Image 1 (cartoon, rainbow, N blue to C red):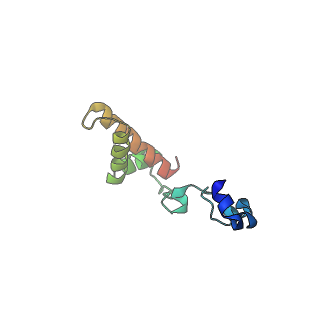
Image 2 (tube, rainbow, N blue to C red; image 1 turned 90 degrees about the vertical axis):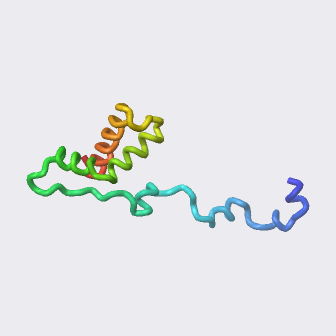
Image 3 (tube, helix red, strand yellow; image 1 turned 120 degrees about the vertical axis):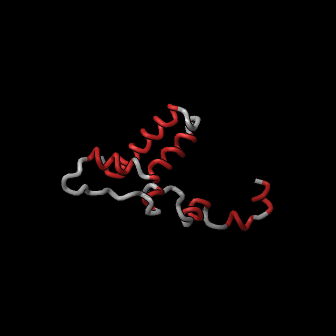
Amino acid sequence: MALLENRPEILKRKPIRSLLSKRPTIILKEPLVVALGLDPPEVELPPGVTEEEAVATIAATPWAKGWGEGIAKLAGYTPSTPEYHAQVDRLSKFVARRMLGV
């Protein structure tokens, strides 16, 4: 309070709550990936393509594999081990299912 005692004009201004209410909120109303447009849209499968075929196709892309490798490394798996490759496959299939909305 010593800081405010030296500057009485601050105490005469609006309360801090009303001052802060004019600032932009830092609590997002929607996920950041949606707000930035990074959330992949759901995809409709063409006739004759099963969900498992679509998941396998997307999971094999460099994007899905790279995402899986990055998360597996962050989780602490050692590259070029069987556990690492199993996690990369699992995570790339996970992201493919999420992209397809399955």
